[in-house]
Image (cartoon, rainbow, N blue to C red):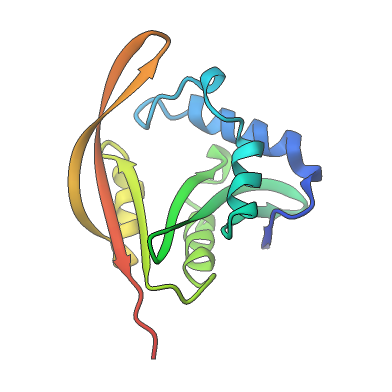
Length: 161
């Protein structure tokens, strides 16, 4: 059974780094990132948490199988660093983590950006009411090479009774 916990006790540091790095490397169609030249995932998670956001971990039998960040942005949250261990994709865990994240707070707007090649993720977001608000070619510097990723920027307005 999936347990979703907020990262408050940072004893999952090695599992967090391993999951994130493996997910980036296993996803060549997603944003290709130069892991050596960006903020380490643990620092990023702490940054989000200390600035009014939340960083979630999905666990099965105490094994970290997914992560999801909610970073405060302009009256809502931006979903970020959403990764599921490749061995657990297609089992509904991503859906469960997304649903949990969307219930986190009653702010009105959730936004995200996703590589246009990530059709499975885009389909999930659209199923939950996210709409494409713009498309842009994002330029990422990777080891002295500029790489272009066609990117969708999506948004969901949350309506509460």
